[in-house]
Image (cartoon, rainbow, N blue to C red):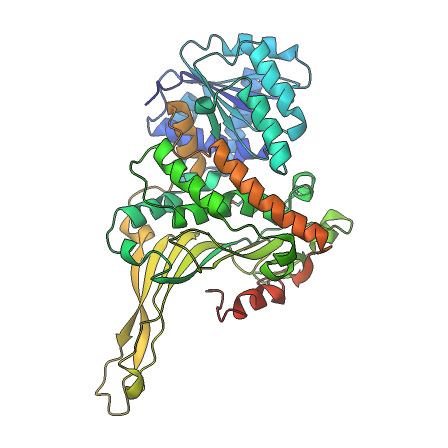
Length: 486
Ligand code: BG6
């Protein structure tokens, strides 16, 4: 393990992410005594603040976003005393000297958390280098968006690589910071039970759903340049797919785990132009109701018509020995009926049913890994209903339930960024995305977008509060598969 950094520099320190996630996460680490004792945190952004007014700003964010049982005036006071602030207009190189003076020497190690508009990326990296904020002990955490396709992602990665070597570049995918996502590794590689059936031999198909109830949330500027495919599939969903499909790594470390993930990402069968209309569905929500509340359509929220997709469903394949012939159905969207993320591994039916002649009907087993909002792993197995069976054997699917919420009820659920910020400070890259992974992800996504363009595919309207356009249902039903919509 590397030396923990003695300083943290937070770009975007007055932004939404900082208020909702980063400051509460850092405070959470602080009160649990997990931050290095002398760690100072310098915030920077365009807004004019001095240390005192930034501390007041941070105090308000903590007051707004911390759960009541985590608020403690004394601890908040101590945490705030770690904070300082330096305003910066990253488009002007001169400002970086003042920033460097504020941060001070990076001899004790510096971790930088960079989330910035794509247009300021290059200038920011150059500014850091010019002001001596890129020396050997500096690690940089990069928050998306890091490009909109392979070419722009390469440009950004090249600009970063000129200054920071790959082993000091920490690309963030906040899904990897989620406890339940890391639990996929424990489930697969901490148990012998699943591995013998974890392949085309035992598995019929896999479904990955990340459903959200929220809409545009005032992020028009970003979302319009992104859409659901780039916002959710390119990163979070492909990472989930890679964790489900990867070979067992030899060790629990950043090299072994990322080597196995990238092999999966490179084995994704390209969705070639001709196949895009059959293998992908896009949608955009129109006015409807979510959880009983009337909501506007995407174009209404935006104030103009838009070609941006707020929903994607697609059928993917991993072309290797383990997964030959096993479809991976992926689906994500905004303004769906429920907020839930889950992975369903549908096993194959038994080769021969001894119950058929006695009227017993079998369902193939399924493993449901619920990532959020609840956290559970549920294995659906067949059981006989109690009775004397005079009119035939009645079998029913029942869940073998592992509720992680209940099992670990005494443990506080952490924000994904707590884990990631701490790993960045400590220098552990395991849960960050390596450049070759990102490039394999973009290569696959760009091909899909080319297919959409070639066919002039426009998102199909779906009513807010529904499970997306009916074509998404047809996508799986054609294969005799039903989305798991519980
Ligand atoms: C972000 C996307 O990466 O993930 C958002 O930009 C999305 O559009 C969010 O809402 C979902 O994250 P979570 O943790 O709420 O599932």
